[in-house]
Image (cartoon, rainbow, N blue to C red; front, side, top):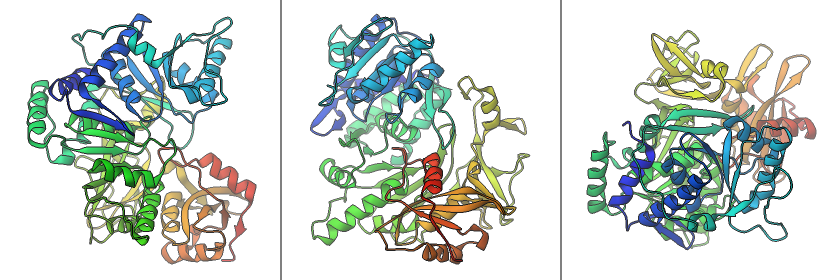
Length: 559
């Protein structure tokens, strides 16, 4: 559908005006309130010169303000820019420079970093930011952000900006751009630039398809479907996205729920709390939870198990589905979760650049296998020449999915050509996700090509070894890296967070891997750490893992 996304949200808002759209702790907003507050924020930004195709950075935690900010920017036909709230000033400045950001909406806890990033721009004479809007008060002991001195910027309080003027009148809009920065596992963040025509089906699939509805193909159809679903179901789904909205999984899950006559609920903690998640599902009768693999699922299973053992189980009877995208979700953890409810575990392989590529749905009683998927219609597993990998051949190929002609990395034509390739006269997105095709046509995910460890001439897929390691009962989380080795080129090194100190040894883990994988794939060194460092979206911090492996040294395996 070639419609502006703000126009689509406004159409839903008009039908569902008095229905709750978002809840965050004790606070809830109706669609009417969300629409008006976003329109007021849009009017403020317009008064600061923000308009068509301008970029507005959003450095916020999950909550209503994030949705309001995105909606406001879209109303202006400007482009929201997601900023990771874990970034330090230099990383923020990279995004500000790369996207040519004109304004920043940020949480008070990030004020110092945002201002330092702007000051670094100013010092380098690359200044693009001219408007700062702060959500909330500065944490105790920290001064509020404020401008001062040459090149400094006045900071407007978020609520003052909303109350500064009346709502921006609606207008006819064209199909504009959407920009999603993705950090991946290495390198500088890259902006994936698409149009709203690309965004709509991607977001809508996270709502309509989950509830068994066809995706509306026109604005009139969306209005009619919204009226019907609201009359029939009230809230067609109640979705609790756990990942940060600054990442594609959290954002697209949220937008999908909003389009499909649902509402969203966000956790209030700024670091993941599995007990809060379980309690919030019960309190709001959430039917859909969005997570990112074992990094979220394992603590949830622990919380549910512990509560049940105390004789005070959490009520998760409302759950119909738990969704995960992009990070390993092991079979054992799925089984543990399904012991607590009758829902489906939907595991998806996708990327910010496109897809989805493959899906696995697991229900109570199913035979569960880690990283075994079914290709989405249209997706393929191909070799470097674009030929399909033959089922049962054992060949590891690349996952590919159809891509439109407009999607690209912002300002990076070389990386665009590497990821978006043309085979047989058609454009495909090939992100580096690797898989082999089993004799029955199912696919086994092998991880990212960038994580291949070459040891003694043999290629080891790091994520394949990780998947086996985390199935050991003594392992809470694990990453695998390749360290330089004089004899073999690189040696497979496991960085492991055990369930408890001393509960598992390096030899036990190596033996566990050797039972499942070829000898050359087993770790030659095991490093034990208290916690595995990951991004809020669950992505591995490989630079940290490598440094930890080098620094700690680890225990050499006797095998």
